[in-house]
Image 1 (cartoon, rainbow, N blue to C red):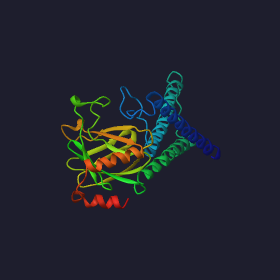
Image 2: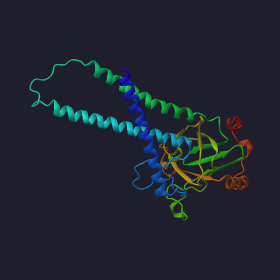
Image 3: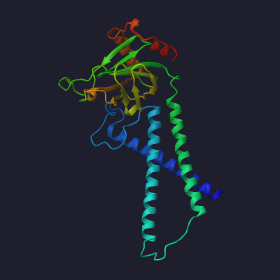
Image 4: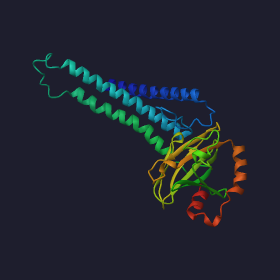
Length: 295
C-alpha cells in the first residue's frame, strides 16, 4: 500500500506540473500573438478556442484550475479509451471461447476506489483555494457599485461621489478602434494594481455581469447586492464582457467595457469625472454607503 500511495502521489504531482506548464505556455503564446500591451487584447477573437488571457489574481487562478482539469480529464479519457480498446481485443469472443468466471479482484477494487478519491482531493484543493480568495472582498482598496438595467449598466463610485450610465455605441456611431457590439459610450474606468470591490445589483429583471478576462460572472438581482473583487494588472488594457443572462429583447446589446489606467491617468480621469458625473448624495442608497465605508 505504501508503494501504491507513493505512486499515486507521484502521478498527481506530475499532473499538477503538466497543468502549470500548459497554462504558462498557453498564456505566453497568447501574449506573443496578441501583444501584451494591446488595449483590445481582452476581447473575443474569431475562431477562438482557448480562454481569453487572464488579468489579475483571481483570473490567473481560475485559468490554472481550468488547465489542471483539462489535463486530468484528458488523461482519464485516454485511460478509459485504452481500457475499452484493450478489453475489446483481449476478451473478444473469438479469443476467449471459455469466458472467465472471476467474480472479484481485491487489488483492482482498491485501485478503482483509492485513485478516484485521490484525484477528487487533488482537484478539491485548488478549487477551495480559489473559492477562498473569491470571498476576500474585505481586503480591497476601493468600491464600485454596478447596477444592471434594461439594457445598460450604471456605475457608481461612492467614495468619489460620481455615477454614470454605460450604453452600447450604435454601429453607425462607431469611431476608429471601437468594436461592434462591445464598445460603450462610458466605460468603467479602474486603476491598475488596485484591489477593487464590485457591488453588483439589479434594477429590474435579472442580469449577469460577465467579464471573461477578469474571471467575473456575478448575477445582478433587484433588491440584493452580490460582492466580488478584481485586481487589474499593469498594461493599460481594455477588457470586454456582456450581460450573460437573458434579460429581454435587447439582451444582446448590453456590453461591458472595463478600461484600466495607470494611477496618474486614473486620477486625472477621476478629477474630470467629478465634474461631469457628479452624484447627488441624497440618491445614494444607505446600503452602498455602508458597504463602501466598511471597505
